[in-house]
Length: 206
Image (tube, rainbow, N blue to C red; front, side, top):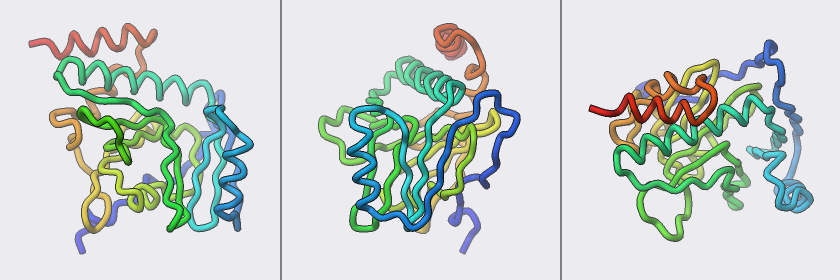
């Protein structure tokens, strides 16, 4: 089998230099009932976020820097889609779960492409890895059938597309044709966010 079809999430690495690291708690031997109970206790709050795989439960409270990067990326994608005339809907940290396989995840951001009134799963999920945990999230996304997943890490964007054998690293988005994730990196560090979106849209003009 080609290595292209056994892609894994980038190897976990803790960013000890982060001024405001994410807070991550890892539990082993958790059950699906534990996840449901924690979700119930959290209520309508957007955090903490839960990731569950084969009895391993990761509880993450994102830092301000984490959320800033996520928000900027989200607005840049929206700006790019506006310029290209592509309809997308953002669903934030949608709770994506498979009860039968006892796997679940809440991405930083996710999108449905096109005019879809009642989507079952997003087409694209985005993960900001500011302070890394230890769960291979691509395993969960594969179970859920998410077509494309992006990881932001160390000021890099890595994109993966779902194939029958697993995820394959790709250079250009397939759910948003013509979008090179690396193009967005030119604007992610710009502040304020509105300037970043303006600069991106200006760069897309003929």
